[in-house]
Amino acid sequence: MTKSKWGESHIPNQKGRVVIVSGSTSGIGKEAVRILSKKEAILVMAVRNTQKATR
Image (cartoon, rainbow, N blue to C red; front, side, top):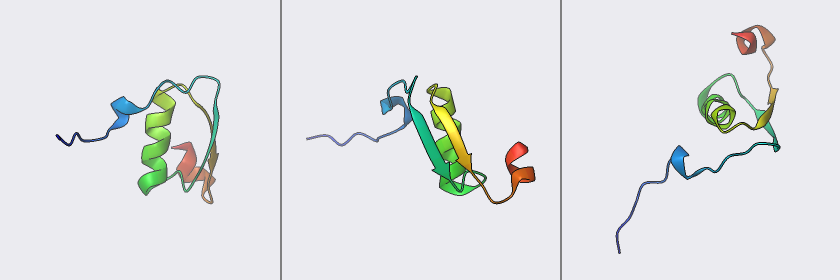
């Protein structure tokens, strides 16, 4: 049995789905937003620092 690495290519298109991501200005949340935006998800970014989120 071979092990394959799981990556963003395994995520299907998310068009029409709403995803709420907390902590979306750094770390895992930021990476999730980056990938899900490429996959056409509708994103709701829950953040504490709106200035940082705007950037």
